Image (cartoon, rainbow, N blue to C red; front, side, top):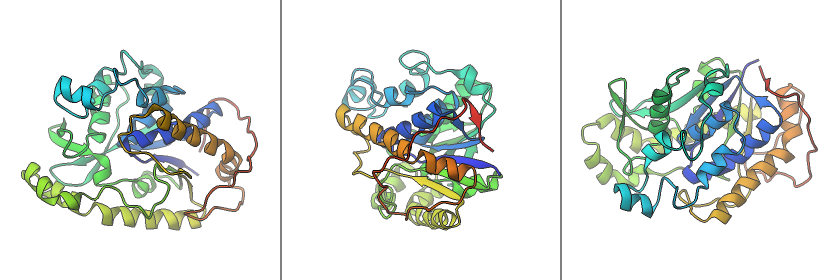
Length: 311
């Protein structure tokens, strides 16, 4: 069986995912297919390049080095400076191991929303550093705050608009089962509802009517995805991990709060590690309800062989 790893976005909330993945990497747990969406794309990069701690350092960068916030607005007149994140961080502040990434053997994709069609498209690259980072920039480009990113003659924005959690795409890519890392504690809380900004969206993207429609339908599409996730989880085909504590603001800048959520992701994955190992190996187990709080009882330690690529 082929298992895929799906990483939801959520801006700074992605620090939870960083904690989860760092614990997986420490145990040599790697999946053959990975799909990152928005901030999940940055997490996917460091997971595939096997750089424990890199994403956490990047998300929790000092304000003087942060790619978002008031300082960036003063310097480049943008709240979010994705050029800094995509084309400066990997080469300076937070070096990225492109060589390990390209040689990983992992099929990794990034979801982007096409402005021309309003549909999700999935990109990957195994040799071109600049193209890879352009793709990652595109999946992270938040509507209204970032400009569309051009790839192969078309224009793209945040992948979560068209496909927040690409479960069906992972199945279409041959995955029989999926591990899903979410960044909100409760799936009953919908993602940003861009329909509330209909007037602004319609004005800003008047040249992209299909994209406007995708923004208006985002919550409905999200709910369908959650229904599919619940179905697969009930069938034992999805392993879902999400925060069990109140989350933080999407653009939180309090380092203490950010690292608290990172540690929560790390320790929660540690507690559920044996549960995940059993699930990976197809052993029957009790599965938590969708909104259940995970038991505080430690699941125990797991010593896996290094660099295991799970089928």
